[in-house]
Image (cartoon, rainbow, N blue to C red; front, side):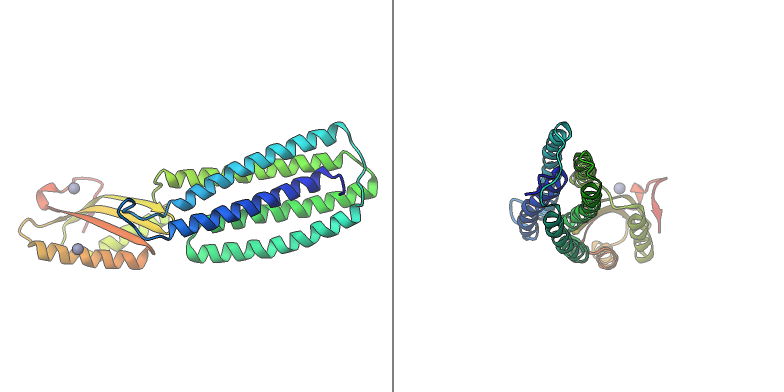
Amino acid sequence: MTGSAALYSDALESIVNVVTAVLAFIAIRVSSRPADRRHQFGHHKAEYFSAAVEGILIFAAAALILREAWDAFQHPHSLNQPVLGLIISAAATALNAGWAWFLITWGGRRRSPALVADGWHIVTDVVTSVGVIAGLIVAAATGWALLDPLMAAAVALNILWTGWRLMRSSLSSLMDEAVDGDMARRIRETILAHASGAIEAHDLRTRSAGPATFIEFHLVVPGSMTVAEAHAICDRLEAALAEVVTGAQVLIHVEPEGEARPSGALIL
Ligand code: ZN
Ligand code: ZN
């Protein structure tokens, strides 16, 4: 309607938002399915697929916008009906801002990377929309036609950056990334505090998959300890870890004291 490349770029991004929201919806439904015979550790990673696809769609949108901006750059023209275009854009931006806030708070509570990713994606959309609206007001007031394609290009670069960040974080989770340093420290402290009777713990490994955190380690106990006693320690550790880490799935390998490691172990 307005012939503005910047408003076009903003609209294109909103279309990507709708498509990715549908993808996120499907991904969340799949990932909340319980473990079954073919996926015995659960379906948590389905959400990372959705985040990765979202990243790819963002790259595609950026390419379309850059083409449109290049066109407008070569054939600069003044805008039609700038006031009506700005009013529609401002109303859509206000709706987007409320929606982003809802997605981020709700997704954070549910520990859902797909919802939070979608929310932050829309935050960048809101920021760029506000920039575009401000820029178009200046363009309409001054008649500087090149400002429109320049802003469209800036929108494209901005969403490219978002897409890159999304891809990187979802790919590192698909690659079985360990929990962050703070969480790792709390896990070690919990093991130290609840393993009385055991001698040491070693080979602690963690990986995150959506709302689930897999924790596994070796627990060295006196060789004369009965299986029942060792298992009681394991049950205690599992219960304690489940309280510290939401969605913890703990696996403990018990071994007699001859297996103790001289270094890198938690001495209990
Ligand atoms: Zn071991
Ligand atoms: Zn057990």
